[in-house]
Image (tube, rainbow, N blue to C red; front, top):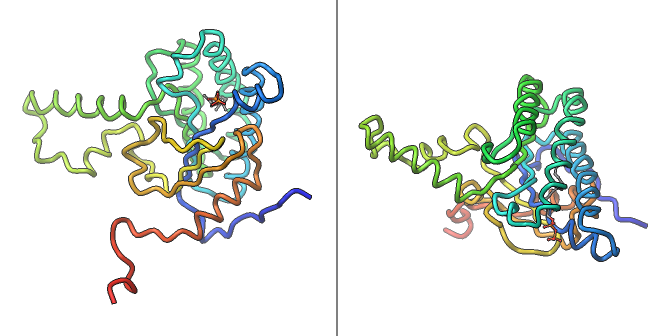
Length: 248
Ligand code: FPP
């Protein structure tokens, strides 16, 4: 019988979970299917996990949908991923709205096609007043690029005398990133047995807990998600400090 982790206790929930949805391609190859089939199955898991997160009252969920490095994939795969993303944003927004999910996007908006950018903007506007799950989709996102862009903007302002370099504290820097307004992830999950961040939320995950899951993203279930939340609940977070018992 399949393992069924119960929904986690609300008091032990992280405020923000971020997920690297990895393994679609290998999932498909193992089944002698084209990589595209793995991405299609991956979208279905996106729906399952967004629903689960909203059901249990998780405040924030960020999903890594397309990285700034993913453009290096064969054009056919990139086009297919763009098509799936377009369809998801277009077709799921009404349901997200119905379920009180607020959607926003982080990443570069200058490289995707105009219609996708317009759909993203429209879904952000339509769900802006939702008060349930805050869903962030990282699309054409890369942390190094995000950090460099923030530094470049601040340097420009400083050069014009509009920003005092002394004002650039860590909090100020964070307020200039695309994630400003969303708390840092407490938990980062990566599927498919790879142990990397792959340019995802580098600044923001400074004190995140990490849970690596062997299953590929298309096989990742609601119960696996709850299990990862349960693992998180058992972690001791010290944020660089020591526990009072260790001092004694
Ligand atoms: C990693 O699998 C996954 C991606 C590069 C993209 C994730 C995209 C989706 C789940 C579908 C679109 C997203 C949304 C929000 C609609 P991989 O191809 O790198 O797998 P591999 O490492 O096995 O090759």
